[in-house]
Image 1 (cartoon, rainbow, N blue to C red):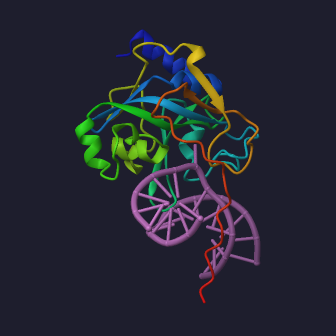
Image 2 (image 1 turned 120 degrees about the vertical axis):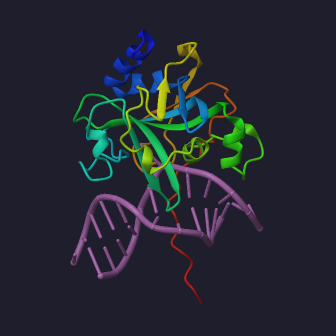
Length: 209
DNA sequence: CTAATGATGATA
DNA sequence: ATCATCATTAGC
C-alpha cells in the first residue's frame, strides 16, 4: 500500500539527486524501534563526474546497490568502525545517492540512548552520519533494503513539508575533492545538524623511535 | 589534537 | 600480496 505522499516521495527520489536530497529533509526514518527526523543530508552524483562519490570509479561489490533503482539503502562501513547510510536516487544505472548526515530522534529515545551511551545530550544522539546509524541500529544488514515499503527500515514523507527557505546549503563534509559543490543541505538553525569540519588529510602515523 | 580499527580499491 | 586511504567519532 502506497499513499499519495509516499508516491510523491518515490518520484522525487527517482529524479535528479539535488531535489531528492532537499526533499529528504524533514522525512522520517524508522528502524529497530527508533524514529528519526532527517535534518541534514549530502548529495552524491554517481558516475557523472563527482570525484567524491563512491560510485565515481564504476560499479564494485560495495557500491552495487547504487547502480540499481532509487529508494534502496546503500549502507557502507568506514574507518574500521562506523556505518553510514544513503538513499539511492535517480534512474537505474546512474548511481547517485543521498547520505543521511544527521537527524533528530523523535521516537524511541530510550532505545537510542541505550545504543549511544557516550552521548550526553539527546540532540547528539543522531548528530552525524555514523551516529545516526548507531542510534537506529543500522548496519550491513540494512544494505540493499527497500525503504518506501513495509520493511524493517522505513522512510516516510515529512508529516509537514519543509518550506524551501528553511533549507540551507554548503560544501560537503569530509570529502577530498569537489569542495566547490554546495551539495550539503540542512535545516536552518536546527541543533541536531552536525558541525562542519573541513577535510584534513590524515597525517601518517608517527614513526616509532 | 589523535588513536582506533578494518574494508576497500589501486598498484604490482 | 601490499599499501594508502577512508562521505567518522570519542576522548584527551
